[in-house]
Image (cartoon, rainbow, N blue to C red; front, side, top):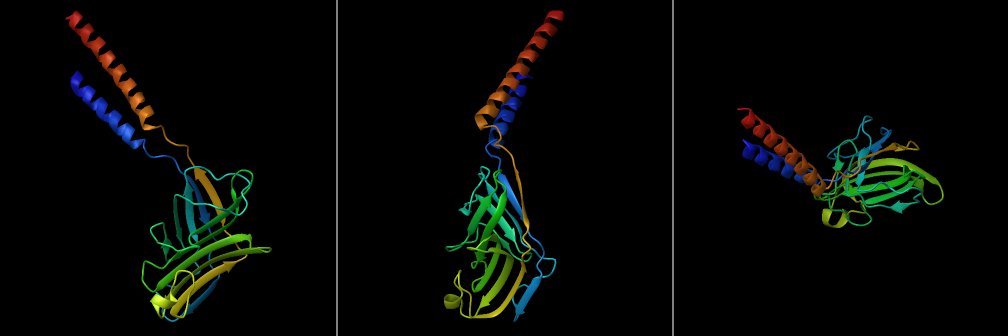
Length: 222
């Protein structure tokens, strides 16, 4: 009986150590306002609606510092959507994409930003672009959420990641002077594997000690 319990306890300790290998993330979630202006030419692979908007998040292993000014940051993970297309790190992008530039207040909350992503690899010859900007560029306040898709006429020549055209069909949507907002959430790192293993080991030792005492007392009584 004691051996079985010991094996179960060691297995639990190993699982605890394994599960504790992941660390907490600090996530900044963007919620944009719905698009208000639209443009469609030809028959693009998707069109935007008034219910669509830019949403997404950027994640870091540590919180953003306070009082940043137009700081280029590199998230460990991100995901953005314009309502019909999703952008993630799996999409190969050429400079200057992806672009994550932020300013923060004294508490590390994002106050102005530029996020620009492009996907020209999911479908050869089709460029998807999404950007949300709420920043001074360079001397005036520029506020715009914009998304588009272009199907290029000559993909190998006219459809590089940065320059669109000529194209055979396109769709675009935007809203101006109506920036969305960022919400921060996060958690500190979970205990390290060694710490968790030690805690589990201590609990196991205490359990075995109590069982041995109970077993000895039972034999003495008999």
